[in-house]
Image 1 (cartoon, rainbow over the protein chains, first blue to last red):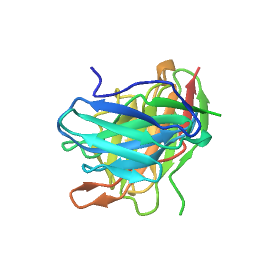
Image 2: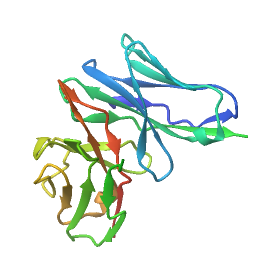
Image 3: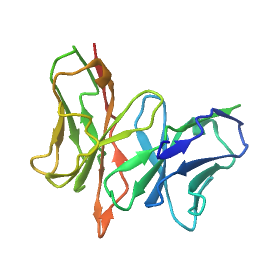
Amino acid sequence: RKEVEQDPGPFNVPEGATVAFNCTYSNSASQSFFWYRQDCRKEPKLLMSVYSSGNEDGRFTAQLNRASQYISLLIRDSKLSDSATYLCAVRRGDSWGKLQFGAGTQVVVTP
Amino acid sequence: GAGVSQTPSNKVTEKGKYVELRCDPISGHTALYWYRQSLGQGPEFLIYFQGTGAADDSGLPNDRFFAVRPEGSVSTLKIQRTERGDSAMYLCASSSSLAGGVGEQFFGPGTRLTVL
């Protein structure tokens, strides 16, 4: 079983709609959590760090559920420019330098 | 300010050749990371430097892969006797160091390596 798993999608979302997807992690020693956005053939760009209380940045909301070992990302009022692959990344407390990434969730926002 | 830069952006080589990939981190970032990403996968950790030393090289797949960071800034990833399976996007990231750990990682544009 992979340490970090994501639904690959694609999630086809009408413009203006809300989309949400999860990322599960298997190692309970995981301590830090991140969402990155990656456009085709480009580098991952940090979207949000995920705090234990959950956090919001504009139209994006991230949540952490430690009991069930998953993080979620919700995008409200989707824009065409939100079309991308969303990677979740997890860092364990015993391995500070290493991010474990999921394979990504593809989101396609349609007009 | 300037982000992480990587050169070359693309590298095509023949099986068995030696390649070097360069990464210039964000100024002031003491931590530097190498990842590689294959199509349809997330980035896979290779090695992490704190200053000049490799703090964790557990992701290097075999002894053909080696990385250095002699002055604690620019890093070079070296691959000997390249194989077709080494073809991937090689990503470098850097972060600041915080008390008790490291900060968020910011990625460079990557080097796309193709081994023919």
